[in-house]
Amino acid sequence: MSDFVMSDDDLEQMYQEVILDASKNPHGKESFASDLTSEQSGQNDSADCTVHASHEYCTAGQSHQFNPTCGDQVTVHVEVSKTEPRRIERLVWDGSGCSISQASLSMMVDLVAGKTVDEAMGLEAIFQKLMKSRGVGLGDEAAEERLGDAVVFQGVSKYPMRIKCALLGWAGLKDSLAKALAQ
Image (cartoon, rainbow, N blue to C red; front, side):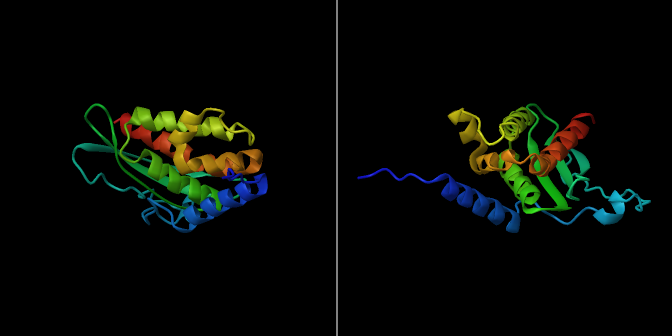
């Protein structure tokens, strides 16, 4: 019985398919932000694009992120439990952009929903490290396993202009969590 070995091209193709599928069927995406085009251009005088916490035991935070290089934008909304350990009770986003940013957001939701804030920030740090690897990967099987499907972004990390796309939602998560925890 021979071992099945994928070529680099086959692996890259599989990664692209996973990213495209996640962007076409995004998890956690809801329509709640005001018109993002007018919000980004400063035309939105009423900055009332808030989603209210649906539970009295949660605090909410929200962050709008924009990548001027390619036009990707996202508003990330998070609700965090008030009791220790602080847990992400709800995570949704609204936005538009390339398949990389949309897939990254979808996989981020799958990874951190229901996790404690500390666990989510640990995953964010691992993802950041993956994005800095320039295609080499983490070299740490346990860390790669923690990222689950998001490890497919190893291929994206080869392209500096695409790294910002993959990190956009994670920046929104970090900022949203900081705002929720500050309340």
